[in-house]
Length: 145
Image (tube, rainbow, N blue to C red; front, side, top):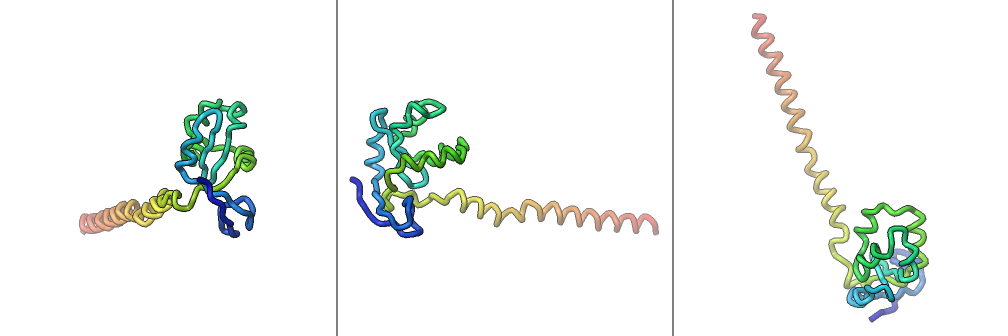
């Protein structure tokens, strides 16, 4: 069921100190029909039922994601700033904190780990080039004498 709480300035609510309704993912999952279509995007719950027939790609696209966390699909499409602005009118609450994915920053941590290891991608070619240069000069000097 839905729970109501308050969201401070760092919360996910639309207004800094406004009351926020929290929804469990089980409840969102029940709203996956054309009569009632809810989506989760970035931890926020949206009732997009009224928008089904207006969606540029058709209602099937929304119904495929209905009742689930559609964040990845939403971001993969590359929605415009207008589309992101339109989301606000369909906002009905936030996902309950206990249902938020703990790995929501997994892509960021993966990127950080890759950057920490990326020195290995350039250090070997640089050291190899320096070594080849030194060896080349050494053999040139030897061939002159």
